[in-house]
Length: 109
Length: 116
Image (cartoon, rainbow over all chains, first blue to last red; front, top):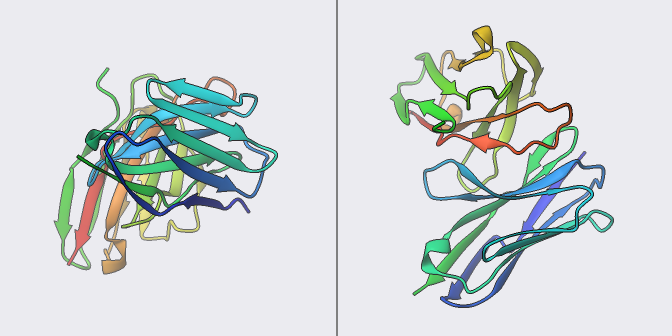
């Protein structure tokens, strides 16, 4: 049974800091991994999708990496801004799609 | 295309009442998913459709829950005899089916259900 863990559960950083969010999973038989952002009371906005054959994907200040063999993915956010404050969720997509509980990020101005 | 649309955004109901939510997926997306999310948790899978066929249902989907997708377009999720434990955000997602499961999921803004 796939289990997905996100660490840390919450993070508060000053504006401008670079930061790393972690996602680990127990079953490496996955098709892809998708990172989402969720603002309070809203749905999920897709940030990046990494196929199982890929090592990383980049979009603007975001970079996501995937290491299937170790069951890990990281989301790197460069030069964080107050507008980045949200919950970040990873979804591990295999036979079933399993979400982590998310990392709540607060970027202080 | 305006993305995945869910209605209503919020629903407050009394215990024991029936509620129905609607999801309009991105046009031409033939896969449609329903998830439930409680505070501080990630979304949990409820069910999904490939066109009009409901292909899988989670054990979370008790017999009080029913979902339909007539004609393979919009979908409805009905909860009968609501309980306070049903209070959650109900999320709908869609994706194109391109012969493999690697297509990204696109989510709506959800329906927040509060059962009093």
